[in-house]
Image 1 (tube, rainbow, N blue to C red):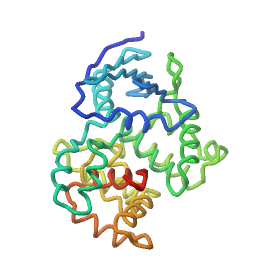
Image 2 (cartoon, helix red, strand yellow; image 1 turned 90 degrees about the vertical axis):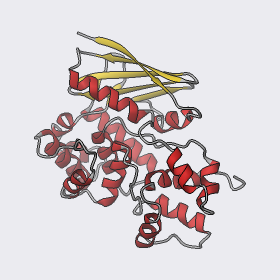
Image 3 (spheres, helix red, strand yellow; image 1 turned 45 degrees about the vertical axis):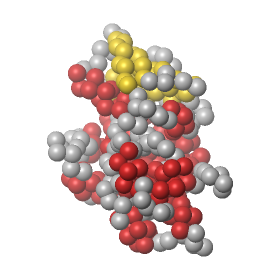
Image 4 (tube, rainbow, N blue to C red; image 1 turned 180 degrees about the vertical axis):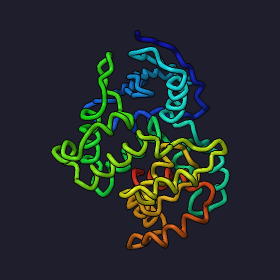
Length: 300
């Protein structure tokens, strides 16, 4: 039995709807996400139920129709509410970092050029983790194509037409050869299935403890073969909205830092890590501004 409910979320002043639509509209084939000027539709599997999130934006709010193909559990309803906070980029308030950097001669112009910039997230920690694994060491267009293939292989189609990003149980049913036949490297395929199997079997809990400490989750993820510090930090950023992720292993972050410092070569990871450390506990928002700086025109 299908079910529909409406969730309305107030948006903060200066909310950058275009950033949200751009992040979720990266796949131009619109397999699991579809965007319009003031609309975002996304398919997700939550607690085994195929759900379409249809979000309409106006200047002050986001009105989301939650259309489930079966009556969702209380757990799925809670996951919907969490997913909407992620998808809309509402986990981290950008103002503390703006205040923190106001007197910094390097960062103040960077932040002023992108007022209200936010971290837009994946719908869940599992989606963020699998996307980070898929995107390891390949260019963005190829990563997006692999993600699309992954969704079509492991996901489920909602009655509204969109495909839903898979949960761990769906991914665990795949085998390595299925993924390798679709241009996944064997190492990448094995890591995806290893992660999905551990989560599905209850051996790896992706939920944060009640106190919000990311340490136990980070340590558990680092113990999974094929998952390293960059993947963990990216997942903390895109999946959990953790405010102090160090993306020193990210090539784009190092390129942005080179540009910011006016140097001829990219700083290495060790130096980048040391440089980022001075901006604790705001390194996630710093990463957002460094990424954004690469797309600014020279006169900006």
